[in-house]
Length: 459
Image (tube, rainbow, N blue to C red; front, side):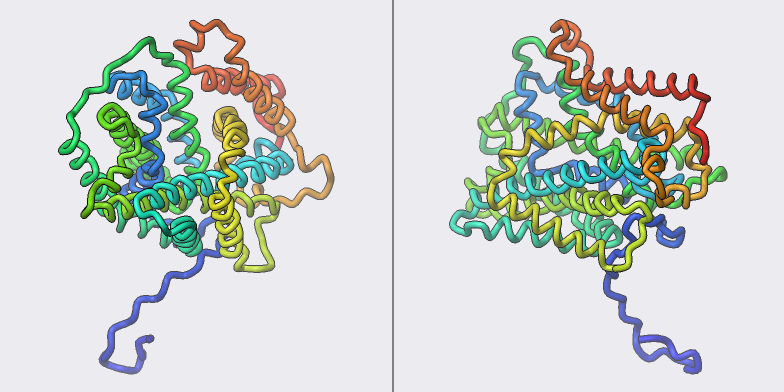
């Protein structure tokens, strides 16, 4: 209903408009839609990191005491925070996703290949989390077959279908409910079982564990930060330094806060019950089983929204121009990728490709470091946004400088990171080798740029 400009009185309230389907694709976000605030940014990323599978880090690091667990997470945060902050800031400088940003570094050809690979990673993890969530719910409420998998898949597809506007509201409105569900489970854990403080057992490989945490959390999410921060207000010279830093910190601190809290909970639960997944406590609680179910559904939906949404936008980045003749291409891809990943979860096929997903994830460390260094060294943030959408006309335009050099260093980083097993044990005991190898090839990349002329030529 609209106001009649000739009427002196509005006799009926305006009805709120239904949420619009997001059709933005990979186009730059208009300034009028860049309204996301610091609190929402923190909530989105803390809940995206707080998956039902996040407590498994307590199982993986079961040889650690609680104090050592906290320290290794703090060290991981300190190591990964700078690139995470810079990527978050990049989305505010230019409101485009990272795989579009990568076109200036890895060339249109390299960025296209990486877009396909990271689409597989995002859709794959969506299916894996749906598989885990469906199995947990099937344990809590047996006899429903694939119903839980279908329900989880449908809820997540519906959320992502409407885009970031609805996702932001979903995270903000369900944050308290999620916290209450897991608080109830933690309460029953402490009430029904004798508390046992996790103690260190044996030597700790600090370097390997830091790599593990970063690949499980902060640096596996960081390259997606611009996908969300592009909806934040633009960074301007008039902005206060405190506000600018707060926007830069919110995603990374949000991710790691969830890892610390839920990982510690999983570590404590493992020592007390022999089970890291406290959501399964619901099967022993005649009244509160539903609490576990709600908590699991929210945890899976929170995480998978940030798997499927970037997977869709990343797949759209395969199109160099970013334009589409069909304005509903983005929501259609949400349905297609969501259904595909849900079917994989039902079939259980992700058990066999989890190693493949991990191998693709090994690209993230050198990709992230090289992208960040090239972005700020080349000052791409001062260029016209249209330069990121130039359609190549000849084969060589798919790999303009510095693409060959960036791709070579990216592959070198993957190879160097995989060489850890050939190094002296003492080296990987103390050094996070995957991070160090990514830093080494990025330094070589930067020196190569300086030698070749300080920055990539503008064409």
